[in-house]
Image (cartoon, rainbow, N blue to C red; front, side, top):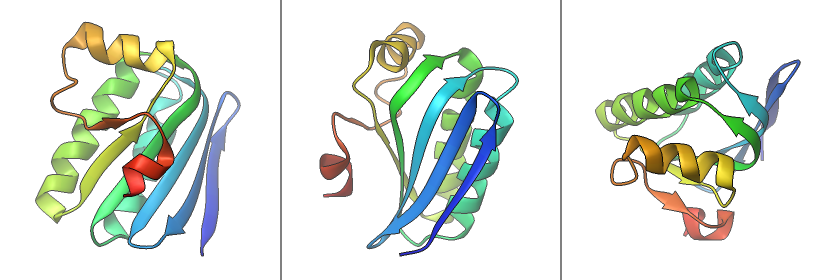
Length: 118
């Protein structure tokens, strides 16, 4: 299992490999200033995986439109690379933003990590 992390003062992304998937566990706030940290982690995960990247957002306390843009972009890049992007989200900050934007059909969301990895 390989691990790594990328962080900013208010955002941390821990990376680990679970079987055929790369899991990005995101903690903190995703806004205009921290979105590039998430984008970089997604880019690296897509480049370094075969089939699936799971972005675990259960510990995200703020999820702005910049975060949504990063995930939609990652989904498109993943599709081109043959990599599926799955989200784990159970908190109001993330789910509410996705709902308001109306993109829940575009981003597969799972209530827990086990479901996203299955």
